[in-house]
Image (cartoon, rainbow, N blue to C red):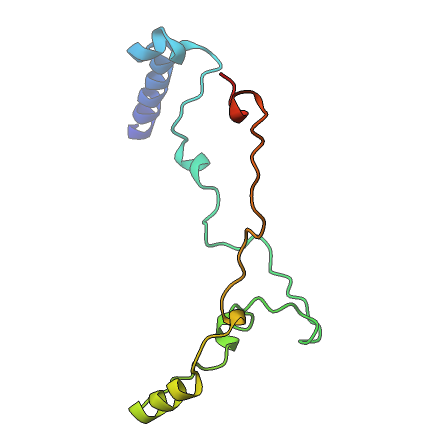
Length: 131
């Protein structure tokens, strides 16, 4: 008897839900038959757990010499440099270096960029500038 009362009450509530709507479903965009709610239902939200694996990974098995190595430190050129040499100069060494180098040669200096003189054409109208 209790079961039949509960089923009758639930069927009555379902019938009332068809005819009685929420106020925002009577007019506006929610009342349109093609309207979809932005919030999905719990059964539609996440069909599978993010940690589940769809497919097993295919790992190629070949010679290790022919497989491209993606490890960074093997290709890092900064690690391939020779070690930096540091010298401790004593006063005797500096004096000896200064005695060896008495004067500067022309080749010690950088080359001059401009090697010709610039000639201005004074016959142009306004000396090159129009007035």
